[in-house]
Amino acid sequence: MIDSDDKPKRKRLSSGERREDFITKAIDFFADEGFESSTRGLARKLGVTQPLLYRYFPSKEDLISEVYDAVYVNRWRPEWEDLLRDRSRPLIDRLNEFYNVYTDVIFNRQWMRIYLFSGLKGVDINRRYMQLVRQRILEPILKEARAEMGLPDQPAKDCEIEFAWVMHGGIFYYGVRDLIYESTLETQKHRVIADAVAAFMAGLHIKLHRDQPT
Amino acid sequence: MIDSDDKPKRKRLSSGERREDFITKAIDFFADEGFESSTRGLARKLGVTQPLLYRYFPSKEDLISEVYDAVYVNRWRPEWEDLLRDRSRPLIDRLNEFYNVYTDVIFNRQWMRIYLFSGLKGVDINRRYMQLVRQRILEPILKEARAEMGLPDQPAKDCEIEFAWVMHGGIFYYGVRDLIYESTLETQKHRVIADAVAAFMAGLHIKLHRDQPT
DNA sequence: GAATTAATTTGTCATTCGATAAATAAGGCC
DNA sequence: GGCCTTATTTATCGAATGACAAATTAATTC
Image 1: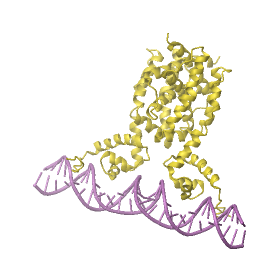
Image 2 (image 1 turned 180 degrees about the vertical axis):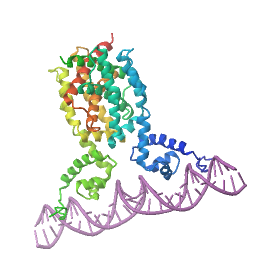
Image 3 (image 1 turned 45 degrees about the horizontal axis):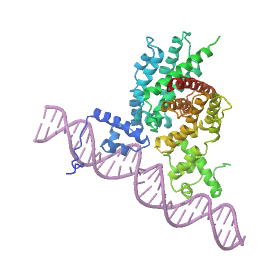
Image 4 (image 1 turned 30 degrees about the vertical axis):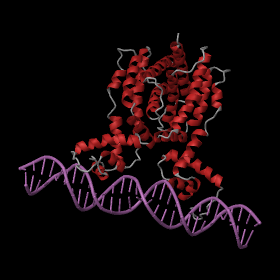
């Protein structure tokens, strides 16, 4: 009557399948419980015994590294960078579309929590990720803005990059409030993005014209 | 010759002093190592034995609660709210001064890390803190903005509050990048704040006029 | 300076942790 | 259907954890 684990019909997976299953579920597990949670808890969630983990990963830390890769590296979409450089459209449209598709990827509980957990652990993968954002997103945005405004191309100043970071961080923090603290209002995401992008673009116009060297 | 702990001249503190010392150093310790770090590690840092902690706090979780209070509750300055309501000055000046003094308090490694650690733990103190920010900071800002623009007083709309959150979050995230990821540029804090506040105010002007019901 | 109080340490217990070695069993191959 | 490979489990180790009880010692009181 009870369909408890009366029959320990343990399913046997190929090495590759099992490994993939481990990583996929480890993302959920560590996102929920943090990286300090036990390998036994993870094994329970996986439906296997704890030592089996050590047939696939030499240590807990190695497993965690693979989680980082699966979340940060594999979910990055190179076409985002193309989108931002498409000069057939006004930059403000590109920014809106970019932040909508970008947040489609990163605004989920897993991504956000893994990002914050790993940041607090001090692993350098976060620093590398932020360099990626700066070089592949923010600096191209500033380059496109100068082009659209008819200004000569030149490397972005520090304070311009920081200004772009404030918009980016403001949008990011909306996701944190939504997914970590679960305390956003009912405003739709695309509306928040539209307002943030509009304010950024207007502010940047003033800023770039003012900061212009003689 | 060696001034090692040859003489275990253990200093004896009064109950009150010891307790205060514990909390002060526990803030540093947990900010550095996270709340999952051991009470033995904390005791080592305090220069006492681990069971002594349990003479002052019934459990580890009780000690952590006191750390929250010391960081969140006790560092809030009610005069911030007065500053924002001082109509003898332009709102943009008040915002600049507010965010400069506010970030003087929260932009330190302790505050930031404790905030992020506790947020991921899911304790409700973060949610309460964000309610505080909304009610005591953001809603007053929107009220002041309407007054300065000569618009009738009315409760802020959700999307207006979210717009204020984006500025607030953008500035906050600057602190995170600086103190958690240690990867900000050399731009001075007050410059970043000035740009963020200016863009917010300009955007808000447009937004409030546009959103105005007939 | 002896007696008393209370701050602090020593000693310890039951769990839980990451990790390893050895035993077991499921599935593929001929 | 028996053999062989290997995926998986059982059993276990040593270290670390939160917490408690009892012993010790520094400071206070008279």
